[in-house]
Length: 174
Image (tube, rainbow, N blue to C red; front, side, top):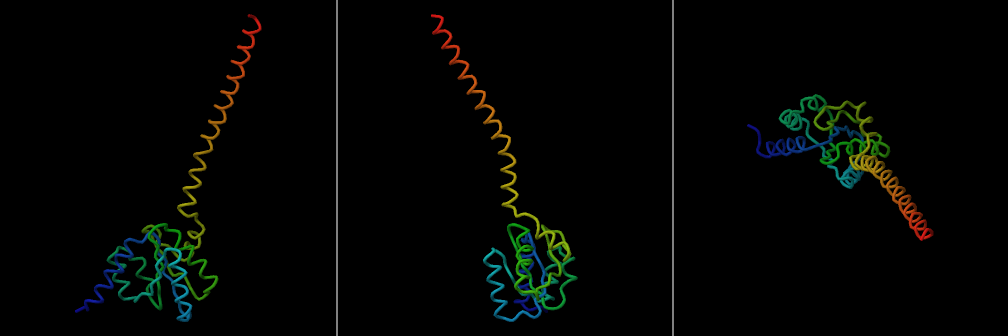
């Protein structure tokens, strides 16, 4: 019979896995406790959750959340980096963290519900963030509008000049 606290932990992990837009499973073997605290704070500062997980409980939670692909990587000391907003942020944060903590190894990931291999994780880290994509889209949409405004302004200027010339011609003929 499972203990109630373990059932609660599985349920909490299942919710986190289900809500996650981006999730990276990492091995943290060899990182001392003070540096783990620093790593947690670094992730928290980026709006991410860094959680050391128990493999058995995480395996159950992953299967219940429909992430069977993740369950097969749950061996050895593991932690998850979870992002709930932009799915690229956890991947980017892990890649940046590996510069300072080279012991951190990507084992697998979940990108918008799809499993990701360690090789694909670096490719996802290169993707622009949601904010960057929105800014690019806004810029792309503003370009033609700006061009139209400039063209209309030129037409209005030419019309004003033409009306001024007509007025001068009428005054000269009167």
